[in-house]
Length: 200
Length: 200
Length: 200
Image 1 (cartoon, one colour):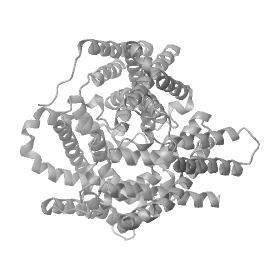
Image 2 (cartoon, chains in turn purple, green, red):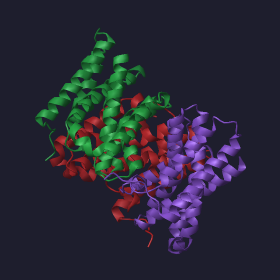
Image 3 (cartoon, one colour):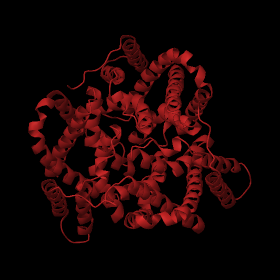
Image 4 (tube, one colour):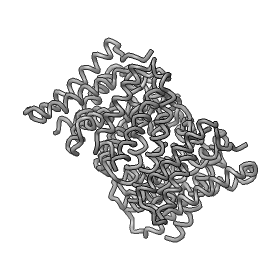
């Protein structure tokens, strides 16, 4: 699972950068920027582990997640003037994080014998709850609840992963297919400005 | 406990409808409406189970709660133009949910050997935390903290239930008395526009 | 540990008073004031216990915490007109609470074999998460994320406590040194109006 761990770290760093960046934009002080960065990066997985009853959560068992998100957030705070230049690459890393978090969350829920809907929800939550907490802490209505195809990419990826459990495909291949689906959908959504329907 | 399960499902559906409806009013997209509906319906019980250490929480052990709240939220999203006509019956179902959630929450806390104050708080929380999360996600100050008798009905019902534990009454009767108390108080409060005192 | 328990109770009362006071200022009704008071006082320790997997959390095992924060919040609601007179002494009690909560949180995390960064974060969280929940429930951007040295005092105290584990000092002395550091830093910060740098 070395590739998965590497992708997980890339995603953690990207999510931390996006959270810290939100803190900088909202004129928070150093502490606020670090909290937003870390919460965005590890909040979803932590909430998933609390709900599954797997405590202490992943990031307290392997502190690499804490250190990585802390250091990335600190770098964003220090170098935020130069950050606009890398905001485009950041979107790609963010998409990698999204796909990786979905498959890790869904996979862990299946290991804990959750049903199909529960597993799909845990996958979506792993990838999105950190951003929701970030927005709530900044008293913004969470972006994802308003006008983003973001969650749909997670839903499709997690649904694909649960469905493929009923086939004979090897787990590794299922992981790759589901993660790639999320990443590709996400990048398409960015490039084409897709949005979900609103009630009206 | 078949009657309790039925009431629980009615309450879940009513809470999901009220949460989804809040999402529609706030112009959220489909995903936002589904999240608000589900969180309102299952958030209180989920938080209670996390605090009691009973993981995974009830709704991941019995996915009927997930499916019901998902489908009701979807129906609200699709049919929200026609929803005003049923907003009055919805209030009755909502009151049923309130009473049921209080007795289930208080009862479970007592099973987990909590003290009397802890059990009362768990009962109130089971019935109200979903709505609080819904409001926080919409960046509204939770309705219940501002001008509602809502929580008082829960408090009286949960307090009654804990008190009656010291009598010889059978559990089923205690459940019915406490739930009925909440439901009746809630309906009275609606019809008479009761409110708690404010500091001034 | 009788002294620590006494300090813990002083801190709980002070945090409950500050939370209830925030509710009064925001014109909440009685229920809202009680919720804000209790959440501020016990929210941080409860979240810590959920994350460490020590359920039910401390305040449900020893209901003194619940009763104390409930009664203090009620007194604030009743006597808020006279409260301005005691807001200065309240700051001292609040500083005591901050120091005590940090060492209790860090100490418990170390008992649960967390790594150094995890233990420091748990210490900070124990002392600050209650106030964050209070602010989120009032739809305020948490004070601590914006312009407070508050968290830095916790960080230094928790860091000191983790560092001193590598020495031969007795635990009681470590507790006292770390708590005193937080309390003194906090009081200095108040009297000198210190603030952390902002990104600009």
